[in-house]
Image (cartoon, rainbow, N blue to C red; front, top):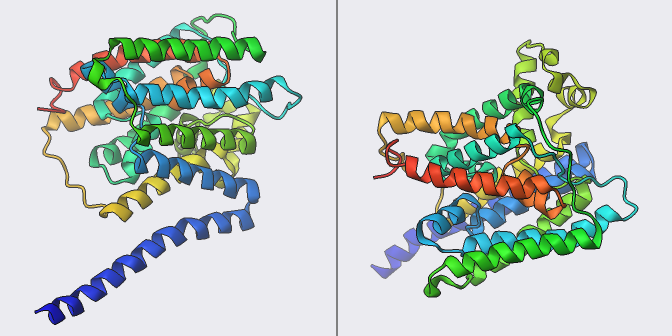
Length: 375
């Protein structure tokens, strides 16, 4: 019996090792091929995106889930890890932006009516889908059926939101406010500390700790975000790349996008005719999906069963996916582009986004049950 089991088990083990070797080799081959065809910078950005995906899925680090844990159970660990990662990036980004580096830009945007409203809607939609911008990419890459369904509508929504963006921003906004230099860094770090201490104060005593897994993830995420900043010359973002995918699709089908003031601008017209493999945000987005896929396949394969949800839940998924994309353009970013990168590069709108989106998340959590998304 032992001999038979061993002989039967050996090929299975060998096949598994071969499959895992393929999972390691696949991204390396793709990255090297991109470096050879498009340039080293683009290959590095794809590699950074894969790193994001490996970190987010491998260490189960996210944005929507920790907010949900804080709202429902007053568990602050995930939120504090997010604040730590933002602070680490800020310590590097602020001096770079204050120095003689004209090629570097921050994730700076003005606070306006559409920004606040968009952030609120985004917060609600991400709790319906249990995933923000990066979270939806990670979940789709790891085979989550809800995110696989939602992602195409997220892409279309991001395009629609960008198409109408300038109309919304014309409703009114405040002057751009950016925290800069050593003073701005101190204010930012102090703000992050106050939010973190407030979360700890609200938490029960048994929840006032941060697991090592999340601390490691926060450090890795910060390192990758800094690398993205240095290589791309701009902070980590997600939503623009998604909208560009749909814009390219619409343009390929013959749509004239010059009717949109946003897509008619020279910089966006240039992106429409350029390869996606030279778009910084698209590359990191594709890398996130690939990294999450690698982790999921390494663990147990992509064998997630289709959840048994009522029809209204799938309809809510489609609508929430579209709203996630549309509102993130109005909000001038998602958890990554506005909250993470906005705050870490000194933009006031990142803080306002955080407050509005957190309020929206509270509403979204309470809509899940009526919409059939949970029992």
